[in-house]
Image (cartoon, rainbow, N blue to C red; front, top):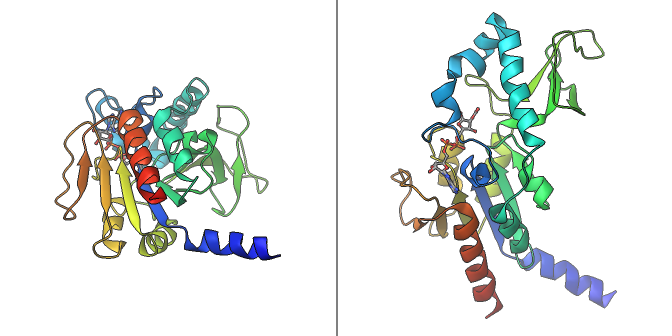
Length: 244
Ligand code: OAD
């Protein structure tokens, strides 16, 4: 009983680290980012594949775009960056808020993952957004209907749509002791604005091999490296420091 009590307090007292991740953390797994050279938005127009209007105009094209992304997921696996964040859980309470629609954080073994922009492996009804289903294969076709007889669509937050998990994400930030930003250009709102929810003077680390516009917040500690290297280094430092 006493041991359980101690364990309970150990978890309560653990520092809370929130990670805001973007496409860059999956780049070394072979998943394309959006805005780098040869990124997805260089080869596809956002308005053709990732808006409610695109869905109205050409459902086949939208389905094909996400089918290709889903198919690609079969060939990729988590990298050292994802794995480093799992290791961080040894001593910290870690919450991952990801803009990514892949499932590489989960497959690496992270316990708490909140998807802001949806999930490739899920589909939902076009008539009732609460009807969400896990997909088995990679292909969603025209005529694949929900139990109410309406077409299923990718469970993705398109440009111009509400971000249902944003309030939950803001709540996580407000109770965090530290924020790690990795692999995001911080171009897309409301995700990029989440930084402002963090308590003043809490440390913010940013891992990215390229320059990111960090004018959005002050005092960010920049680790200019790819996710695998930068996160491994940062996680080892945080674990070591926490032991002392
Ligand atoms: P971006 O493509 O905008 O940014 C990717 C970031 O990853 C850039 O800052 C790169 O420098 C960085 N990067 C590249 N390789 C990396 C590596 N090996 N390790 C770490 N970082 C690396 O992607 P996001 O910021 O995630 O939304 O984009 C945000 C949202 O815009 C996406 O969720 C998507 C997109 O449109 C929707 O589709 C709704």
